[in-house]
Image (cartoon, rainbow, N blue to C red; front, side, top):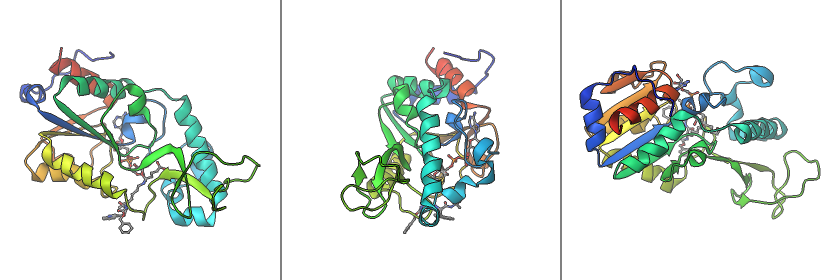
Length: 250
Ligand code: BJW
């Protein structure tokens, strides 16, 4: 593992990790940045520089320009398929094996945590590799490739869309319930690579703070929750996480 021997973590943080019964982690786009997957709110490059990703991730955008939105997701699906989990993803899979209970709540739709070997994953915003019908929300696994973009639902003829949660859409009820109760019941909460702006995910670390949990943030830039964290660790997760796991479970 690509650990950095020069990291000096506070001793109480390492002890807390070693003693933890249930570690809860929330990840955002930043953890996949080192796998080459662009984040949402940092500078975009290339073909999509002219579009604001936030404006493509809405049902209104899909209604207005389904072709553009489908193509944006097709481009991202292709990026994800070619990307590999980075040392940050891999360190979380190792951490899961070291603690009695571990829950990984992710806002990411890229499936890289699964590919890194993490097991207990709660996907808040869906998964880009699944497709559903825009009309009735049912998952669709096969459709006719007749050149139409987006393709159509073989059941009802509705347009197909990725199975992700867009702005203005509800998160799946059971998924959100599990995430909130996990944030409340774990004894350590780590927020990693998340800008902590998008709700309701951004309220999970604050829920942990409210319940008196030990809170850690890993991010190269400060976020709205940084001042509330017990241990704000500034830097890329691909460097900090392997070092943290190595320090706690050498
Ligand atoms: C690194 C790094 C490295 C870089 N290592 N770190 C309350 C108040 C105000 C608004 C609302 C509210 N409640 C709801 C809303 C509205 C809205 C919202 O939150 N808007 C905000 C913008 C204010 N929320 C919603 O609409 C949600 N729905 C909802 O609440 O429904 C309620 C409802 C009720 C009744 C009827 C109907 C509805 C849904 C939100 C869905 C978000 N969807 C997206 C797209 C998913 C699909 C896709 O991938 O395309 O999810 S938007 C996008 O943002 C994506 C992400 O998961 C999400 C969060 O972004 P994330 O992961 O934090 O990424 P970035 O780019 O913001 O930040 C990256 C971070 O990484 C940075 O901090 C970097 O510094 C860091 N970083 N390199 C570590 N190497």
